[in-house]
Length: 327
Image 1 (cartoon, rainbow, N blue to C red):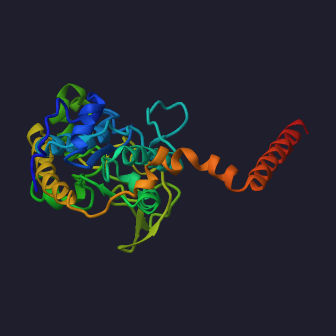
Image 2: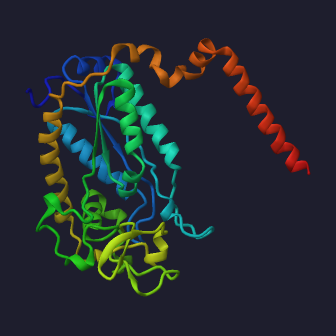
Image 3: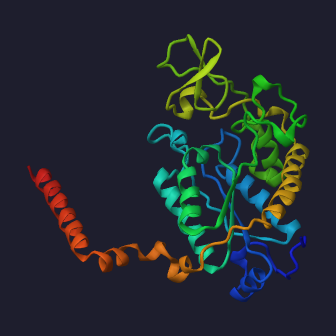
């Protein structure tokens, strides 16, 4: 194993490079990191970019120390619970699950087409995990490439950050806009953090549920008599008025830097080992983008009668909808 990767790179963000640089990298390494997260409210004191900053910081730090490449970030994610009411101006930009899946698939297929055999998504937003398994499997099953998904944050799972946060468990240090995320944003750019607006907020049960239920953090489950067997679709503002989950007041720049360094060190080891994976994309699936650009054309060539029938069916449905509107 050669670490760092033996190639000269002016930047580790592949968008900053020209294609001869990509070709030189692919001669020695076929793994690429893809940061992804969201643009969503993070309380009154943190920027909407908080989750995306986490993904970029981890991806860029690991890429730098290993001399690997990462892509630009996928800056939007699955965040319907953060939209709040119409006209409230919370700023969240969400996409449908199918849209995020399609975007991840197309990004991966583009990279695989060029010669990358190992795609690792670095995810900074918890709710993306609810919808990604089908697309991760589709990428692997369709191409044979290795695809990975990394969650370098702390919610209920403390992991590498054991002992770093000061907040007790009931002040949910790793949750939305609490001690950890506030610390990380202070380390990234303190000018964007409004600690004068930071407010401690504990989660509450949504008003439409009986008081016999409980809500202890931002996970989708609800407690009943101490048991967490029950899930309800809830919007964020239904169980926290400020958008914060926990206590951001103990946040420091030093904690944020230490948290990212912990992720960098472990990520360096993990993704360097992942380079040894024997999985490789099938060459015939790289041809002209594989299925990504060719599905419609293949359908017409393979079964023109079926394709014409589908077109007629779509026309009938549209006609019926237009007729209904006129009625």
